[in-house]
Image (cartoon, rainbow, N blue to C red; front, side):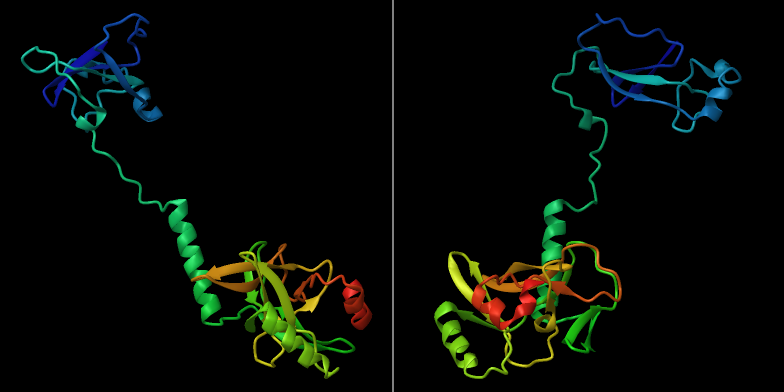
Length: 258
């Protein structure tokens, strides 16, 4: 069965579920736009409401049910063919309120920039371990890939860093807190030797650590940060691989082998 209504001065035929399927060969001006399905409850009442077929269908009319097709015939009220019609002539465009991947990445970067520039260090504490010294432990869980802390210190270029390293070598009590890295074809060093309240410099070494280093750019300046290389449980010691495999370093610091 079919019903015909007028929508925006165009003829609209509505075919319910008892209408035979359309022939593969049909009028080229016939456009199959959409298929819908009413609720099962409505379909159960189909026989009760069949006497309502043939009247104009309103938005809240429960007399129409079953699977249906809406077919638009592009004819005007005067019977002439209307050209260049689009679906958006009949239906408004629904805009998505969801944020794009680019917007989400920008927000994530801004949040990370704020944590670094403001020196926010949360979810960890320093404890003393007998025979090992200071260590940093997680006070909450960290998810894999999550920012943990910045390895904060003075950012030096290679020439200045070598001079500082030579000075520190004069005093055996001075620990090793200089981290060298490459960035945009240049060698830099984060010198965290100076005692501060920052915890990134106190995270110990392990070849099988739960953190890894990563460079994060803020306005063209590289920042050395630590992110979780796997899920970290509360109470775990935070560790990462210092990456120094030289014989001289291992001879001076045997714990680098582990």
